[in-house]
Image 1 (cartoon, helix red, strand yellow):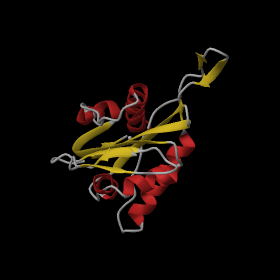
Image 2: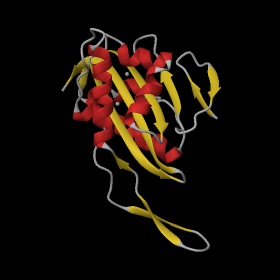
Image 3: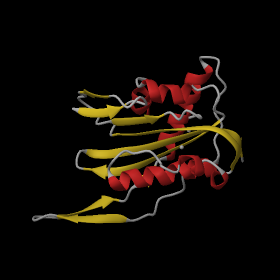
Length: 192
């Protein structure tokens, strides 16, 4: 049983056999609004009574993010909506938030979202912003499907006013395998 919330804040439960996922979408009345740098090459050692095993350190997954970005832009262009551009700085802003939610192992939105997609992210003349956050042990395609099946997340992805997106996913080890913690930050602005 997995619980997720939509942009309207309604909560419902759904079962899923293969994918553990939770989604939160946030739509601001002003607008709507994720990618980051390399993770440290280190491992965390976990010891139990019988053995000690090395758990890989969390790491960003560029191939996962490239797939998500391709799926986002395919969904947009197939509906006559312009594809979103991305920048390293906007991606870095998304990565910072993915890292934070993965460390907490809890989904939440960036309370400084507007600031995170502005000057530090290389964006000026910001008119609207939005954010999608989620986690899953599934593929990028399954994460994208979850986003598209949630009205608030879908609205952010297909918002024809957005010009840029930062997409960043952090893979973190879990008892059942790897979990991808994803942030998408959307913005209507001039970004470099």
